[in-house]
Length: 438
Ligand SMILES: Cc1cc2nc3c(=O)[nH]c(=O)nc-3n(C[C@H](O)[C@H](O)[C@H](O)COP(=O)(O)O)c2cc1C
Image (cartoon, rainbow, N blue to C red; front, side):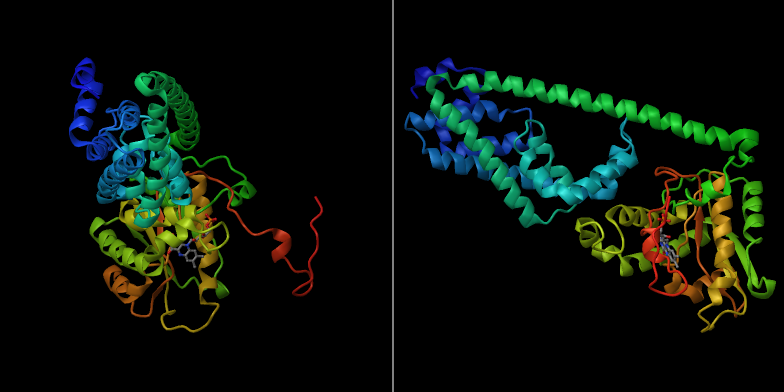
């Protein structure tokens, strides 16, 4: 390209042309690196120009594609590192502050990313705007670096190659690429507008649903239980692991425990104690033991749980993220109940727990009626002796679980998913199955 040609190009194209003239293929790599980190600089301008210049003989076409891809990769790795430094939990917390985005949606996106991250990174490279940003969730989710590099290099080579070749084919009219790619940008903006619209509708509906649910339990200052049949409650009491800090009134706690102790115990001995914990210092201490237990049992296998096919591992990716959330936020639940059996310490009787777990389930169902979420947890058990001491329980007591209670903050009163009934029901002896007739 002559100096006169260069002089005619102004603005960004002029700057890109002068850089390429000066630095050749290295200039392509540097400009694309910049473009990746600062998306407003358009590759639709730089790459067709580089393609055109390579046909004019000042650069080698294959090296231009290689340099551009190396630039994309370097920029993408910088953004990946930024995402990784922030981490998943912090990213979600930050994003959840943006109006219209809430934790539930973000965690859904995170689950989706954990399963389809490779494809997202590959295809994302072909979409303006998304091209750069996709590296951030990949980093936050700590996608394996080799996988990230492979898909980024592949996607970027495709995108860069296409623009470079288009510029080479169009010759001096290379600027047409930028002009026509405007249509692509317009389509992206339209798609984003539709997505935001859908998000607004979803949020409004959800807010209405929640207001409805809360309205029922708030009648009479949150003291009136939902009008729920026993069977409805049985079918809509899943483990609730995302709980708000909103306090639970004392009378609700009393009512729930009053329902719990109607449960069965051998000989109606009721050798139990129901410890209500609200003291933050006690909760923080036990929560740290719980987190230790979580990390030892599950936390270390995060990637395996999140990328497993459905049914491959005992816990689904969704349940894992819920349990992980609870492990990190246990101390925030406003109330815990820790039921303990007296005289049960050291017991080897496999039926020991049957003298309290029925009552525990009654607690769950009563809490459900008041709109309070619960879950049965045990991962603090590596510190059973410490917990007993901290709570001042008698020496012979055995804690049977820890129940965090709180008004749900995300999730639904969905029907718990279980294996098909016909597969687990045996008639008059193991192995005799019957079909359930509607
Ligand atoms: C003995 C026992 C121990 C459990 N321990 C924990 C635990 O430590 N942490 C946790 O998040 N959930 C724990 N759970 C809850 C189960 O994960 C939950 O009941 C199961 O996933 C079914 O959930 P769903 O009713 O929502 O489908 C425990 C449940 C039982 C019965």
